[in-house]
Image (cartoon, rainbow, N blue to C red):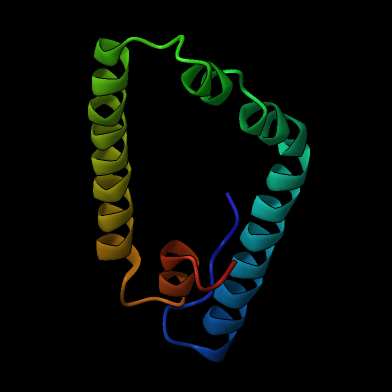
Length: 99
């Protein structure tokens, strides 16, 4: 197990900054690797099926509810990360402004 620089020291700040840059690079790499999946999702047949009238009213009513739960869960997760890292340089990373 490697030793970490003492908190508050110049070396610790440099270490945290390097870690943030590495994490941001990792997120960028993952986004690039998942680009084809993102493209597939964007080309999903569901929107076209809606336009053709092939999706039932019940199906249309259910979709926003499912999305609402997913978004709320994601927001809670992000809020917890911001709470945990809000007083560190990682704050910008978790808020999205550092990526």
